[in-house]
Length: 530
Ligand code: TNX
Image (cartoon, rainbow, N blue to C red; front, side):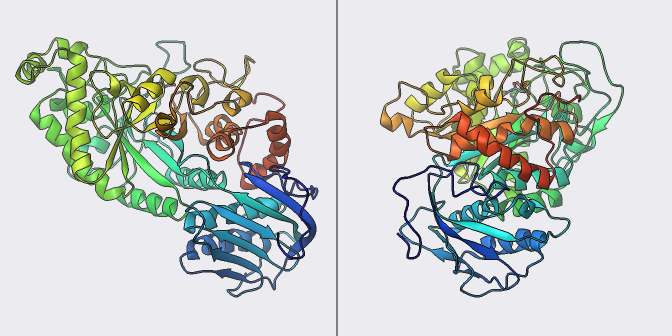
């Protein structure tokens, strides 16, 4: 127990301290332990900020956000807010102690110091989340000791920038929003039938042709209705370097996805020799699963290996996703080349052919020290070795992959697809799939039942997926993402035992923070008309 701080008799969970009007203490995601104490720290122009070596990034971030909100300089020095290293703690673990005379964040590594700083921001009034003007304060923090560390290593969000190009500034904003919720993976779905969004120097037509389509479908069930408006856009390699650096400063890793061998019609539109048909194809203007897949020629494999070379150069993170989802095999069944390939390799069916083809890319990545990642369809026909599996179709894939010794990230479409509507109200924005309420998200348990403890270790985390067929603006993206991402953050960060009522209570305070940063979340009162 710290001197000067009265130790409460028992752990009171995430409710750190008495509510200060602005909801101080309503931390999301809920910390592992929080012990409120008496007294309060007041942040003012005299408050200094000290960082132990290695914790400069967290200090720079904290000085930046608190400086913007309060106008205080937070000059370097001891005695105010101190970021201290504690070698006994884990990389992402921190202990935050607020006393009347100082605030200490002790952490095992730089990420932990950053998460401690994120929690501290939430302990301040919600105006601490404003960036455009300063507020007068007073900037008080109730005394508390918080001990916290994440439950899972992979706390991810997928954003589908292929179906709808999301401007770079919006992605930068989402990186901040992820970090605010202690999420650490941004899976960028960069390519699909309807668009290729990543500049590749060696193959400029991927974006010049593949980055644009003539129109987009309107509605989800109405076929044959189009908006008649061209859509497109892409990230230059400089944009990507900027995004990667911005994310790294916030302990977010960007996992790029190049989706193969299905969902690749935009690439085939740019370079028809990659496909199975004699006639050229346009960038696809319909949603749903297309028939067109890559062919299995040596040149096609070499093409995508060269694409992966540039991807690896741009994205320093370990993981690279090669897709593997929803690849129809019809064109291979009709292809002499595919039959020849199967005969030559002694493969029994097209599933094994897909597995072999994916293997050409996963082996390529493994040989270069990367970790391949793919959707659970890669289990069909034999999963490529060393590949982490994104289990989206249910727990069967997760269990199968874990038993085979693969790392698994769960993202069940029934609960973690945030393109699904948030209520049954017909006024919800254009829906896809079934209803996934805030509570449905909150009640997800990432580790499926029936695994041994060793197998359960293979579940390295979860991700929430924001597919964008029906999310055509940043406003709607906010609406679909929030507050469900706040619930998701509790699943992957917080303790296994969760209380939805307690979460909803803290969410009221959290909404003030979302308001302050300008997130257009779905209000608890019901749908908005977009
Ligand atoms: C399935 S999940 C897809 C996506 C769609 C999504 C719509 C997965 C690997 N593939 O291509 O956008 O459903 O909810």
